[in-house]
Length: 413
Image (cartoon, rainbow, N blue to C red):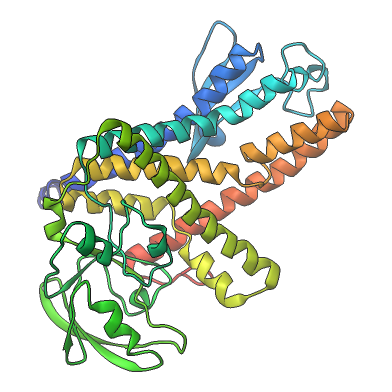
């Protein structure tokens, strides 16, 4: 009975966190489902037979039901994303290549609509949510220092402290509360976590405005950071590199909760569109640096880029942090940003993703390649990269879990 009571008390103590994690998982599933649902609906509209609508990734766990057109709706074992399987996509079913209701036999414009439908709905969903938030009034998702690469993008969702002080007459407190820590950063190496409060560096008191300037005076130096962790004063020593000194943390601005970013509806729609361009630019810059590091074999850039990839567990941590913010706007803002990230991700010319498949469709059409040979080659390329992407997701999830638990897993942590 004591063990049962202990479990019951533990569940009760973390009830809010558990609820938010479940809501986070359901929200991500919703974004994936509307993405795949648009593929599904556009395929049906184009008279292409849909063999399967799957939630998560095979192997198949169960068939939920089969509709009148013999489309299977399945639940699968690997909880990553979802898929729509169209007739004629399996090279083993050679009889389906020339079937009138197969994808490969559909007209070009119908193929384009089917392939781009998913990323289009993710883009529209993000725009509608952000428009609603800017029209009704919201607060920034997080605040960054002026030295952050995103500082020059002039974002409303992730503004700099200087932008806050200029546009909203923000007055900083005499401390710096950490909201989020970049996984590869100096702050992470010093074991800072969310909600640690930095009070001074060496003998100099710091706040959200002065932190960046004080750190820049410590380039290529060792210095002591005084902060509070779990209400306990403590210190840590940090050594900055020779080029720049940045902790790479997002900071919490309590007084900002009294400020509302709000525009008339028409202007809110344009601000939301501009914000999406800003967030997409930031994402492409990060991905571009990763690609450049691979081509140039720059180990420093490659390490920073790989270490900065945090997706499934990081997203759940954000949903947990939302319980402390008690702001439903922040929840919808984060869901919109995830939807936008799915749009950006599917625009990458990576085999198995939507944009890559569109490129192959255009190549096959323009050069009039034989359908059978062309499609078999594409299928095998997509299959290989599909498993590589799943492996990357599992690697990131394992690494995020190792950091979440505070342990180092060889070759991962």
